[in-house]
Every structure is written in C-alpha cells, then in structure tokens.
Image (cartoon, rainbow, N blue to C red; front, side):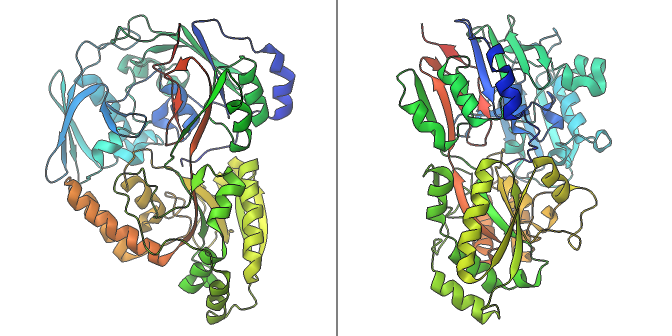
Length: 514
C-alpha cells in the first residue's frame, strides 16, 4: 500500500455540511472518497486518493484492467530487449490533450524525462531513476534506454502515477501543475475546493468517441465511514470506492444498491524491528507468527473479507509463488520457541499503527494474541502524518528508530513482484528509503531480486522471485496478517465505476443504465 496521510475531514465537519450535498442529475455521478485529495499531479504523489481522481483526467501509456492485467492505453504495443535495458513503445494516433496540445512521442519524452530528473524531486522519481535516455525515432515511437537492466519496466510504466500530462501545461504552470491538471482523459478538470469537493466534466474532444457517458463527476472527501454509506443510501452519491466490511451488510440488503468485492493485492503485516536484539533471533520471529491466529484476524478485522497470506506476495501479484509450510497457529510451539530463545517470561514491546478504526482493531487483536506468549504490548495509535514522519522522515536511521513493531500494508501498484519484494524486503528498501520497516537484510534475497531485474524473460524472472519468496518466508521478518479484499458500494444501474485490487478506483467508463 502506498504511504497515506490521514489528512481527512473529521466526522463533525462532515455532519455540519452533510445537508449541502446535492443529489446528482441523471447524467451526473457523485463519489464519496474516504480522505482529502492532496493534489492532481500523480507524478508527484504517494496517495491512492490522488491516483483515483486523476484516473479520469489523465491516461497512461499502459494501464491495467480490473484484474491488474496489462492493457494498451496511449501506447498500442510495446516490447523489451532481451537484456532488459531497451524498451520500445508504439503510440496511439489522433490523440490530443485537453488544451489542444498534440499527444505524440515528443510529449511522452517530456513526461518521462521529467520523471527521470532527480533535481525536480518528484515523489515518483524512484520509479525512473534508471532511465538513461528517452529517444523519439518518429512521431509515434518512443525508445526508453536504461542505465542497467530492469525487467519490471513495462509494469512500472503502468503504475497509476505514470500519467501523461500536457507539456504546454507543465511549462505554463510549473510547480502549480497539481492545481491545473491537463491530460488526455475523458474528463476535464473544472473546480477544486480543497477539503470540500472536486469536479470534473465531460471532455467533448476525447479521442474515443464512445466515451465519456456521464457529463460531470463530483468527488466529496468524507472521512466518517457511516456518513459515506448514508450518502450512498440517500442517492447523494452513487459510488463509495472504500466500503468498510462492517457496513457492507447495510448496502447489500438494499434493493437499490450493491456491494462490489474484488481480491486485493495489499498484504498487511506486522514488521519486527530486527535492530532489536529479541528480533534478531528467528525463533522469536517464528513464535510471533505462530502465536497470532491469522484466520481469526481476517474475521475480527475484515469480517471474513480477506484471506490468510500464503506468500510474501498476494496471489493476484505477478510471479506470486505459494509457500510451505502454510501459516498456522500453535501457541504451545510458540511458547517452546520463546523458551529456547531465552524469553520464556516474555518481554515488552511497542506496536505502532495509524489511529483509524480498522488499524486500532488490529492493534487490540495483536496485543491480546501476543499476551499468550507473555509478550507485553504497548499499543501506539498514531495520526497518519505523524506515523509517516516518524517512519519516513529524513532524520530516521536504523539506530534511532523508536518502534519495536509496526503494522503496515503494501500494495504493489505495478502489479509486479518487483514493486513489493524490493521496497519491503530488499536491503535497499530500508526505511526511510522505501518500506522495509523490519530492517531485514539477506544477501540471498537481494541477489534473487536483482537477478529478476537482469532479464525480461518471464520464466527467468519467476524463478528468481520464487527464490526470494522462499527465503523471506523462512526468515519471517514480519508477521503476515492478511490480504484484504477491495470492497465498494455502488448504486444499481451504474457501471464502469469500480474498485481496483491496488486500492485505487476507476470511473472513466462510468455509465448509468437507461
């Protein structure tokens, strides 16, 4: 899961403005988001909410379908060299940006050069730091050359942040581009009142004459779960892309509304800080995995709308390999391992998470479970921005990290094993650089991840990632907790608006049945 700040509207503010939301017209769509939009420059964002709104304004060269399979969008075809250093894309003809600027190879070069430019400090530069050059042999061909092999490049181009923005708008607005988005998508930006609403309207000159089929889409940030559902049930909005499991029954029992459920690719874990002496011992890490009942966790936290992980990767992630032995709960064996490690009487730890209702349930559940092996857990619910600063602030070092254990989820929005294993389990991924909160390091894993990137051959990549997954599963740097399903609520008769496995959503092809 990408790093998310909980800079969202409080329930009291929503309650005070609830009456101002207007029911949508027949050709209009309203959507209730679970948090505030941070900006509309996906290339410089880490937030799923930004990617979700941007999905209708901007388009990518390569996109994902609803099951995270690669599909053409602004590129019609692509191929990679056998050494995984050169990637060639053929572009769609007859496309214009919403400001009238032509979409062509020159426009793609502006965008990719921008992402590859470290001096701009774009948040998604890390995805493109290996780009050595972007060449344009003709108006509709782009050749990307890398400084070293990177077999995950095609999937990286499909990341929801890698959108094509108008070069003219980039030049005109500079650093303010996030407030003036101009893409090639079916919807044009109209208005943004930060913290209140954002409106996009139909792009009359969209390259695909079949779309869009709604005239206007209005997004409302609504933090409180119950309020979002109430707005759906009263037709003030027609789509709620993040639906808490505990409220889905209310939606599913209605004749006018439906629940959408899709297997997710976010894996939730409790990372154990391996700088701590207790967690340097694999017996302790295995004991923690054995003491926590993952099946019960999926029920308590997600109402059963999740599965127990069978690998460091979610099943829907490319190159996932099921691991053995499967996760199991055995408190007696966990106690034996703790005794062998010299911790029969347990020890004290802190456990960090965000302070939202879902993660607080996680904290309470894990505290109770670990008490069975005499581990005294101090739960620490943190506001999202505070958690982010403590874990990813530039001053953090492995020696100064204040947490013993921390709950987090990671969704590889490229759909590929690389963008899960490398940030979460490679040595180069140690926080604050990426997302390896356990400070886990194993040369076998690092080599396997690197081997997979040295080739564009899917079979060779799969074999290397299988080695990495097997070693990580053996080392247990985290307690694997759950792979949660994507749940959404939608008015019946609305199609084309749906949740994505990576935690984003789609609405570009939204339509109402007549």
